[in-house]
Length: 366
Ligand SMILES: Cc1cc2nc3c(=O)[nH]c(=O)nc-3n(C[C@H](O)[C@H](O)[C@H](O)COP(=O)(O)O)c2cc1C
Image 1: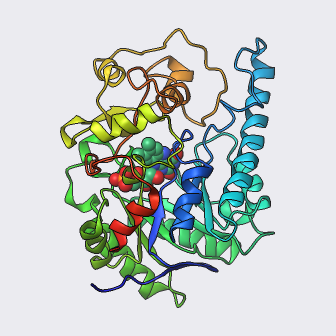
Image 2: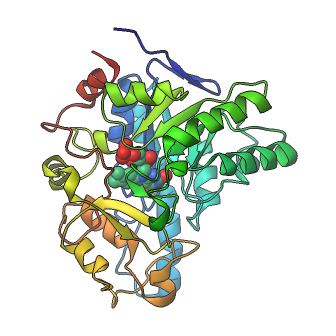
């Protein structure tokens, strides 16, 4: 069996070309990230909403202003806790953080992450056009935008070169046709072959090779769950893969055991699209919560917006859909009927909940 090549992003090299996708809220925390890093991949802590169930936040706080301030302060402190924990568990591993551009505390989270020893920042859910400026004092931190089209990569490269004299250290290309979580395409466009990895990855690889002297690796994300799908992605020209769903039914995943078991029992026919308050479709597992949303209900419409966490939010502004912070958090803590369980369409591959090291060995060939 051909050994896989190591993956280098900026100054950081790992033995296997595998990045674990950031998964909020607290699905990929310190435990999962450190386990993947220790197994020879890049482990990623998702920074979204970490404060919510941390000792730094009291959701019962009555004053909306105090509650909001406390929430953002808690997100920062909880991110520091999580990064310190990841580093304790994996002193020499390569650890990244995933920070959504759409988060209102984006700049604070980026500054916090770089000042607390992350090796890379992955950033999507919007174009991270200002990221180099926010991290200029830590040039050793690799910057990796998450995009779904070659056009978005071009916009980022041009802006970063012009304004900051820097290029991205890699791109993650998330395939909206297969990936779990928020998707970078409208539901009605998902069948269009032009947005799939088979089209976008070769187009982006050629653009980067023709335009820049420095090699910029492309990481394929979405639907990768075993050695065959990993090799397929490398065959398209990718230098590595980013995997989310396959790392959920693992001992080290930070979600509640009931969340992992729900994933374990799911089959591809349980995958559905669901609208999210940010205005994008998400890919998730069917459950009573998702059925209600897809029937046009707004579960939790009487809940308050307690943190004003997103730049754009239909729940906050017009009480449509649901509070995504609450929905993801409920699911991750084990209420899989009343929460939102994101999943990619490769769900159903795992036979049991197993250690990350075993999953990694299967992916990279033992
Ligand atoms: C439960 C779950 C939560 C996710 N949360 C985030 C997130 O907070 N930020 C992000 O950029 N991507 C998020 N994603 C996308 C993953 O990082 C990854 O790119 C994607 O899962 C790859 O597709 P796969 O699930 O088919 O492997 C999430 C995916 C899942 C399944």
